[in-house]
Length: 144
Image 1 (spheres, rainbow, N blue to C red):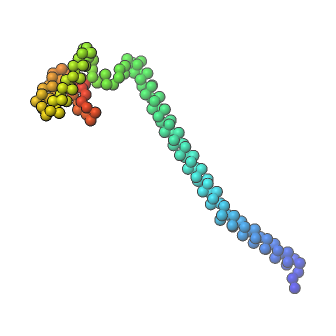
Image 2 (image 1 turned 180 degrees about the horizontal axis):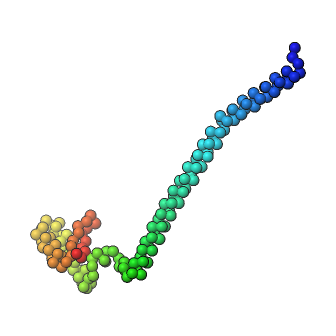
C-alpha cells in the first residue's frame, strides 16, 4: 500500500505542519506582547528625556541669569534690585517714608470716596517727578 519513502515524506509533512502551527501560535501570541513592551519602554525613555530637558532648562535659565548679572557687574550695570531701580534714587530715607505715607493716605481717601483729595495726592507725586501705578497688589510708585 504505502512504501517507506512515502511514509517518511508524510511524517516530514506532519512535522513541518506542526512546527508551522506552533510558530504561528507563537507569532500571534507573543510578538505583539513584545512589541507593546518595546513601545512602552520607548515611551518611558522619551518621558524621562523630556523631564531631564525641563530640569536642564531651569538650570540653564539660572546659569544665563548668573552670566548676565556677572556681565552687568563687569560693565557697572545691574547693581541694584529692580524695585529700587524703578523707584529711582531717593534723596533720603524719609522721602520713601513720605511717599509711602502719601500712598496710604490716598488709598484711605479713595476708600472714603474723597476723590478730590486722591487727585491732589496724585498731583503732589507728579510734581515730585513720581508716578503712581495702581495694581492688584496695591499702589506703588516709581520715578518718571
